[in-house]
Structures are given as C-alpha cells and as structure tokens.
Length: 412
Image 1: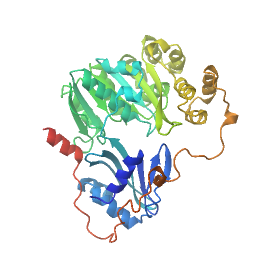
Image 2 (image 1 turned 135 degrees about the horizontal axis):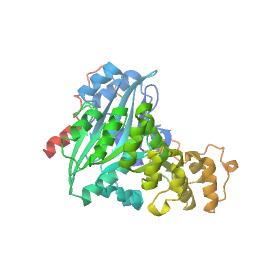
Image 3 (image 1 turned 45 degrees about the horizontal axis):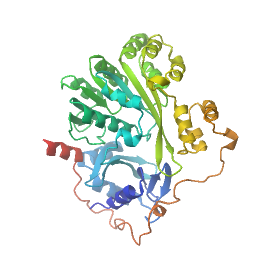
C-alpha cells in the first residue's frame, strides 16, 4: 500500500473532488468547491514529496516528469476509485493534483440532465459539445451520456481521452477506449485512425488545437456522432471559439461545415448547494435551422436571442438555469451571481422568478460553506495517516502499472 493511499481513502470518504499536494505545505482537499487543509497531516518537504509521488508513478510517466517537469496519468485503487493525476514542478518543488473519478458512472437521472440533452444521445450523426471551465463536471456529464447510449443502442463507441477517466464496460454497445500517450500519440492521430475503426460514436476528450477540431467536424460530417469538450463558458462563445481557431481565409468554409454538423452545445458550471455538495447549472443550445443559419451567415451574436425563444425545443440560457436553482432553494443567490456570465441578466431572471435580490445584497463576509479543515468533515481519528517517509533517499517501491492497460488486457 502506497503512503498516499490513506489520503485517497479519506478523499473519497469525505466527498472531496480533488487532492492538492504542494511541497512545503500540508495536503489540501477541494471540498464542495473550497480548498481546505488536512490538519492531521504534516507539511511535506520537497524530498519527501518526490518519494511519495514516485511510489505511485508508472516508470514512463516518472521519466517524463524528470525530463519535462510535468506529466499526466491515471492511478487506481480497486474497489475505491480511479484518480486523474497531474505531476508538476513549481517554485516550491514537486507537486501534484489528483481528481477523483468514481467507479460508478452517474446516470442522466441522477445528474438531472434535461430531456433535450438526453435526446442528443439518439442522434445518428453530428457534433455535440460539452463545455465549461476546468472542474465543471464535463467528464461526468459526457460519461452519463455515453452510458445512456451504451444501455439503449447497439453501436460501436470509440473514446479518445488523456487520460482515460470513466471506464465503460460493454452493455449493448462495443466500447474501445484509447488513451493519448499510452495507446496513441495524439488526439489528431487517433481521430484520423478512427475513420478506419468503424465507429458509430466518437468521444474526443479534449479538442485542443485547430487540426483536432477540423478532423472532429469532418468526422461528424461523414456520418458519425462526435462528442467533444471545450473550455468555453457559454454556447455562443463556443461557436465563436471554434471559428476563430481557423485562419480568416478559411472561416467562411468552417462556418458552413459547422452549421450543418453542430447539433448541440451543453455549457455548464458547478455551483455550491445550500445542503452541501455541488450541482451543475446548464446552458443548452439545440442547433435548429435558425441557429444553423446564424452560424453560416456569421451572425453568432444573435444566437443568445434565438435561444431565448427556443424554450419549447429544450434550449435554455445559463441564467435561466441559475435562477431555477436559486428559486428551488438548491443554490444561494450570492453563489449564482458569482458564477453567472451575464450578471445583469441574472438579476432580471431572479425578478422573473420572484427572487428578491440585488448585487448590493452580495455578502462581503467570508463565510465558507465547507468545513474549515478536511478533518472536520468526518469523525476525528487518533492517527489517520501513515507516517511520512523517514528516508527520502530510499529507493521507492516498483512503479504502478497503468490500470487502464490492465483493464484492456483483462477484457481481451
């Protein structure tokens, strides 16, 4: 058992989403959106941190970390959870961030995804994008959508991720999951190869560059259903981001291609719930004929107005979702206001819902909703963690194997 495994067990127990390890400080959890220290754990010095991280790193990733000062991989504790890992060097020394990936894939019902979002899972072709800032739950939403397809259709699903997060087991569909860096050199290389692998549905974990975006659009145009993610905050800005990736002399062509291939955009952000935990506020764009015309004609600034009139088709603005969460008592008005992009519009949406609130009421006091330390989130323990490594220079135990390689070998 690795030293850090005790922290991972505590992380899952208290419901933290991330574990932050920084040299010279105590480990810290992100708990209900807040960073909180683990007071039972001592400060970890750089040489100790190096040994702790090396103990769980696959040999190839540790060499990459040594050479390039950062690396990504996945770590698994069977029966508990998987963790997405990023190792990095900063001005304090070695550090890492671990994101928990639950073994159980939450369903669309558990996430409360609206019917319009579920309908996108039954398309035969087109491009569907799930967007939002880092840590907004995009992977969880996509996993639920893929799981719905897996349970209701008989298709071939191919995912390209960095790293693989949720592991899907075959239900009615055949699912192949490829990891960038382990099973393929890059997203664009895997996407090019995908056309020779007979997929019906392709999931692109991250559309990072122009070539990946272009191949994803072409794949959607050739009769495949493509799911992808972008780090944009609204549906309209997602369309602009894609078009702006291309040189000016190609943007008219891309508008035409995107207008026919784009089927939907789900832009989401996570808000702290009044009862603890977090809930996603969703903006939903369904690419009907009016939206397609606006994209083709370069009038993307009018998309928001079209969405306001598209409620019957399942379209909604982020402000509408935030106002509903506040009206139902799930989210405080202050929290919704902080997360809103169009803040003036949110105040108007509050008024339409009968919520009496104004920016002047925004609390200036720092009253965190999460416990002040991770230790307060559960019963006190006499000694919850193993002692820190006493000999930082000692040779670590053999590096962990990639759990997703093991999974693929087990599946055959």
